[in-house]
Length: 500
Image 1 (spheres, rainbow, N blue to C red):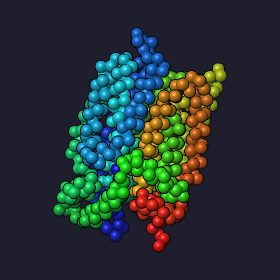
Image 2: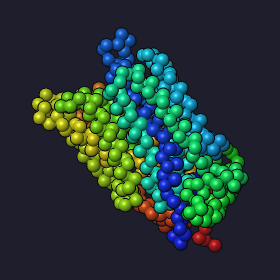
Image 3: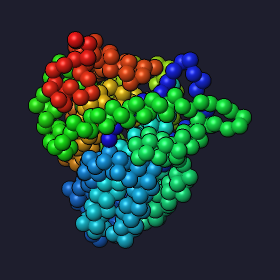
C-alpha cells in the first residue's frame, strides 16, 4: 500500500475544493459506523450488567464484550492496504458496509449471549480496522496538499459522530432499538458513497488513465465555467506510481519477508528510524492517555462519580463537545501547526486527569464532594475536547506525512497494529484497574502517561504544517543523515543520494 502526495505547485491554479471535501466526508461515513461500534458499550453495558436481567453479564464478560471490537480491528487493519490495492479504495469501503450491517443484526438477536455478542463485536471490529486504513488512504489521494490537514481530520471526526450517535440514541431508546437503529448506518454510508469517484491514483495504477482523468476532473470541479489543467497532477501521480513499482520490483519475499530483509539493513540513524520513532510514539501515547477507556465506560464513570447531573445526560454532553472539538481541529491544524496542538493537547489532558484523580481520592475517602458535583463533567468534557483537537486526529495523518515511501508499507501496518493492540489492552484492563487501583489510582496512572507523552512530543515530533511529503522527508534527512534512494535500502542499504 503506497500513499501519494497530490501534486502542488504554487505557480499553478488549484482546483475547486468543495467536491474534495464532499467525497472525503462521505468516504468517512464508514468511520462513523466504526464510531458507533466504539460508543455502543457505554449505554449497552450498564443494561447488560443490570440487576433487572435474569442472566446479566459479569464484569469480566462485560470487559470482553467491550474489548473484542478493538481485537477484531487489530486483525482487520493488517490486510487493509492489500485489500485497497487489490479491489480498489472505493469498492472495498463499500464491501465493508456488509459486515457492519451483519454484526448489528447479530446484536439484535443475541439477547445476553456472550458468545454471540463477542462474535458480532469481532466482526464489526474487522470492518472497522480495515475501514480506518482505507479511508485514510482514499482521503489523502483525492485531496490537494493545502487542504490535506483539514481532510485528514475527517476520519476522527466521523468516529466521534458515531460515538455520539450511540450516546444520544442509547439514552432515548431501549437497548434493543439502539442496535436496530444502528443497522441503518452502513446502509446510509453505502447509498451515499456509491456515487463518489474512485481514487485517481488507484485507477492509474490499473492502467485506467481515462477514468482517472475523469475522476480527477470531477474532484477538482472542472467544468465549462471553470478551466483547470489536471495534466500536472496526473503526471505527478504517474511518477510516484513508477517509484512504487520500482520498490515493488525489489520485494521478492512477500510482506513479512520484506520486513525481515529491511530490518536486517535497518539503520537507527536513517530517516526511516526517525519516522518509526515518531509514528509508534504518537500511537502509543494516544492510547495510553486512556481516551478509549473513558469513551467506552463514560456512563459508568459518571455513575461512580456521583455527578449532580444524570450520567446519560453527562455522556451526551461529552459526545456533542467531542464532535464540535474534532470539527474545530480541522481548522486549527492548518493555523497553529501539528506539534503545537499535540503539546497543548497532552498538557491539558494531563491536567484534567489529575483533577479527576484528586476528585475521586477525596470522594472515595468519604469526604463530601456534593458541592463540586459538576467537576467530573467539566474534567471529562475538557479531556475529550483536548484529545479531539490534537492527540486524536493528528497521529493518523502524520503517519502518512513522515514515513519514507520505501518503508511505508510495513511501518504504517505496524503502527495501526500497535494502535488497535493498545485499544484492546486498555479497554480490557480498565475495569480491572478500577477494581484494583481505584478510580484515583487509575486516572493518576493515565495522567502520568500524558505527561510522558508531552515530553515525547516536545523532544521528538517535528512540525509538518504546510510542507509537502518531500519537504518533510528532507527535514528528516537533515536530522538523521543522508537519505537513501527508493531502492538502495532494499538493495544494499548503503548508497545515499547525496554521495557520489
